[in-house]
Image (tube, rainbow, N blue to C red; front, side, top):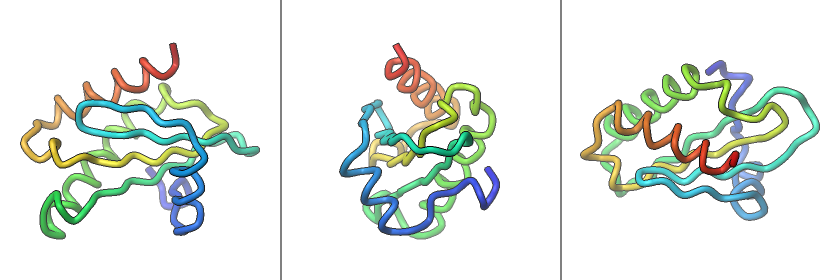
Length: 109
């Protein structure tokens, strides 16, 4: 995921979370909101309860990798916020990837 593909501003995060659609997975929440441009933008949110800065950054790196590998599952005209739950702490990388894929497929059906 490139830097220009990320949602960064606090106002954008709040708008997507408060006014967007919500999908719930075992380890994540996915919030999405439509936009006018043709490329999706992504934001990743990790709460402090998940762990210290090293652990939170590890999860952000893992989810950036998962999003890059499964970009075809995301609609082009949406912004996405991926919020990682505390339950993800004990999950493996493959479990996280499977949960993201299943959550997105559940939302697209």
